[in-house]
Image (tube, rainbow, N blue to C red; front, side, top):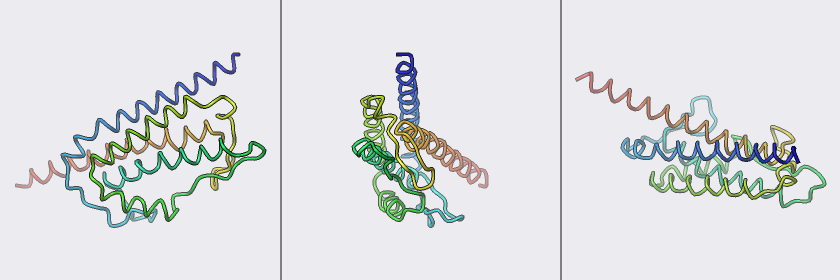
Length: 184
């Protein structure tokens, strides 16, 4: 019984971190919309010179949460006999292509997709049984990972990182605008 309580506490903590990161992301909507039009990055893949502005960050976040939920569902739905191959790496062409397409969408639509996907992920996390959370997948780079670890790494921590990235882009943009005004 103690182990279940610890696992429940861990799930609650993950859900709380995801809720907090989601709310932090959604609070940035007004600032991102006010900064329009955002330039599109010329290089948004994994090349050393690539960079992501707000549109690329939002496009990625809007696609990555549903992607990882689908991968987690594959693990949970598969035969439990062996770790299930799952996931992708940053160089995945479909990932990069999707960012390229979705960064053209209206900012508001991207934020709406992020909110829906994030709150959906919280429901999925809370609805999994302890055995489901312990199920194993085999990631191409990270190796064997439990469903719970996958939620943490690929959805929760990943979203937290992109919230910071978006804040940094907004901060840099504001600094650039302030510098430009001072040059007059």
